Image: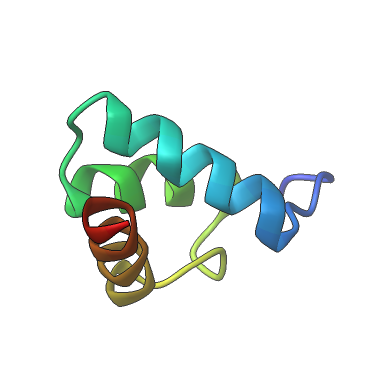
Length: 56
């Protein structure tokens, strides 16, 4: 278990980064889970954030 607990802002910034790199939501979620563990963020939440980035 990692000692660093990401907050919402940190996760949003990472998701923007993955979005700009043209990563899929599944890939972004996999990378977050790899770094921070299973409880970090659901794939559904990743998909919702990507939709927000796409539409404004």
